[in-house]
Image: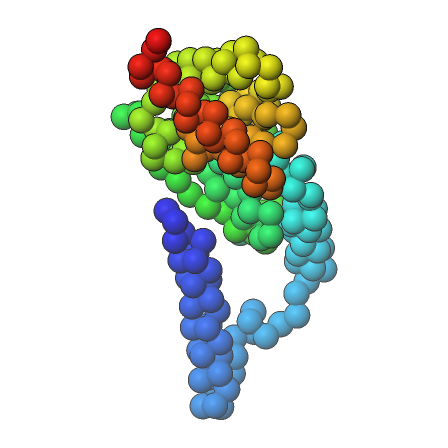
Length: 225
């Protein structure tokens, strides 16, 4: 559902435009606009709207770090017009506060939906993902090349490369929430599946040297002495 937020926005805008055209047409024909459309909101309606705006602002004003605490959690989302959504949060857009939800299906696949950030009134955490669910959710964002490997294969690749680097007196440690990224000397990272092109660093000299080392390491793996 990549286009879901855009489709929802277009639907809302189209509905408002249609209502506006109807009211304008009535005015031009000299007809009386319906009283419930023209009448000012009651005190209860005003209070309810103010409460909704306050709750929405509370969600939208959260920091990216606060939104991150909702990722990989099963949640129940209360949105505008009493709409309710339930699913696993894949990510929260740091600009719009839009929520992307994943819904596991019986066949092992997933469906996805999005809730616009400005419509969110409340988010209740129901469950925290276990390791199996975290892997399923992370699989959605994995590069195609990485998806060719099982979790066990990636773990073996990581451990083997880490041990080889340490044997060659190169400081390396694991980092990241799931400890899948290798960090070399605090200046270079290696992401799964741990090839030369999976290295990243702002220091071009170190990047080139480590990529060369990994290339040699892979060659040794294919043709052991």
